[in-house]
Image (cartoon, rainbow, N blue to C red; front, side, top):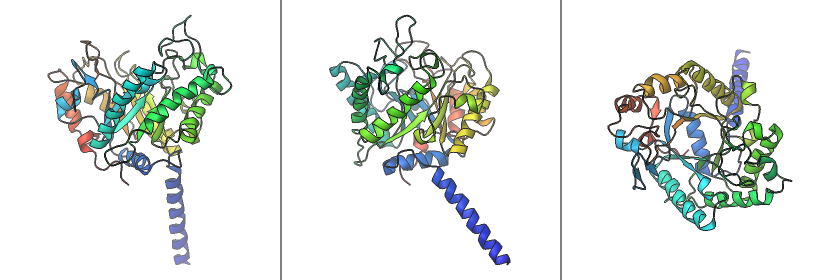
Length: 374
């Protein structure tokens, strides 16, 4: 009888384990093995670590642009960030020759990161495809483009053409090993605010979720893009799981959950506990639904607080034991003397950043080992 109960217990434990393993999977059943491995390894690393990321890190930095194998972060600590942020705005709805140049530059950037063993995350500051102008909402000028580009809208065909440009680029990301570089694709970010034309005041919940589902479906099922991990990331306007999930399209359409938060991290004053609590909401939803979680954007412009890295950022991520696969700070502008979010050599926050770099919780590119292998 004891043996029977012991055998039953083992069977139940194995069944639970298998069930959990099956629930933690990509929404693309045809994803490349490298993409599956990246997803799995990010999930495993998030138990005890967070990868550090920087937007446009290897494209340009404070006072420079286009230098080979350079980043401000590497100049400070000796390693590139583990996660490099790029943006496909340069070839969505612009002129044909501009598209060609931008596609190739960005392709090389992503492939170089992949060849080094780093990770790329792709945002999309999508110029308004209906009213013209940039991605930012301009009252009295911008049109609420979401309802025009979803199926049945009068600009839907144009949207498919734009997605085709992105899909073709995704399928050109071949590394030196002959495999496609996986990327984290994070469209329509900060959708809970009103500053972008896809923001909550400018489209209904149904319109937004329809746009999200069509975007994923068209890239994955019509254009055969199988090297994307799809990330869903509002800004920080939520206070509960229900708030966070208000525009969530469903588990079958999202791989990663994130949050952008500058306001609580020093821009509008410091509320590290509130930032930590919101990260915990994101992490808990991800854990329950077999998704990755990330701090998809944050930072403090000019980093005037010399202990920000350990006393604000690290504390926000650690406070409630959130399981976050990466954190990304925003870009370092080439010409602006104040618009930067990562330190450069001789910046006054460098000593504290080096403490952040050396902390066992944080991982940089040189710390990664075979992240694209099972």
